[in-house]
Image (cartoon, rainbow, N blue to C red; front, top):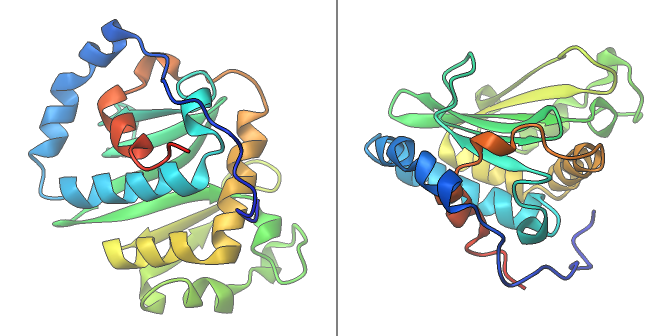
Length: 199
């Protein structure tokens, strides 16, 4: 969780050629969007820093979808088990992110009390306070954080406490069993997520 120990990953990825080819057209469509470079850079950070042993667990325990058809018109979405972990959306010419985490990691007293959200901490994790907002999805100990702008998303991912919370939530859901979204895994996006994760 603290990033002090690096779990040994595999060098070679297990891949499905059929699945790789299935989403190439969507990936090429994403590359034509003005947000493409920012999306790939943020995904690279997320894959490197937020998913444990990402090569060994790819597709079977987490997956990334490109231009998913689910509501909300996300550009990309990362899932584990039955849970959405992280999504990126177009925001004008830029991007905005949605992180799902444990509420107890973002309250002042580590409780599930929605009135105890540590707003001061959240605001320190972004460039300007207007770049961050939050909501309470259904489910116990689940907290949704929305971050606007490439620079603020990058700063949020670099904040030690936030990063630890993201890792904890991801590990919780990866441990809940096989990923239900394996069939929508986009290997072309995963290439960018995993490019800096080899150990």
